[in-house]
Structure formats: structure tokens, C-alpha cells
Image (cartoon, rainbow, N blue to C red; front, side):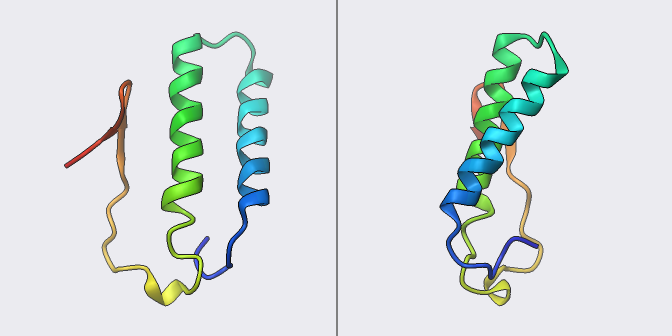
Length: 76
């Protein structure tokens, strides 16, 4: 869905800001949980979703969704 739209770093930055604001709007959230959710969303927005900016045809079939833990990305 996000591939083939060209570079969009400004949109990525705004999406991350919106995500952080949504977490703030929820109310009190454990600081560690908020940090892990922010890190995951920021990472996937600027890496995974930005990886195939030139063409949707570049996205490999069966691409797995990265796994994330309290300590960051889990490499498999």
C-alpha cells in the first residue's frame, strides 16, 4: 500500500508525530510501553514502509512482518 509513492520523509515525520499524539491522547501510558511503541512505529515507518519507494513491483511476495520486542527488533 505504501510502496511506489516516492520518498516522503516529511509525511513519515508527521505520521510519527500523529502516532505519538495518539498515545498522549489515550492518557496515562507506562513510559516504557510508550517508548517501545514509538520506537517500533518510527522504525517501521522510516524503514519497512519506505524501503520500496520506487515501485510496488519491487516488493517481494510473502514478505514477513518484522517482529518487535521490549528490546527492539527481533532478528530471525
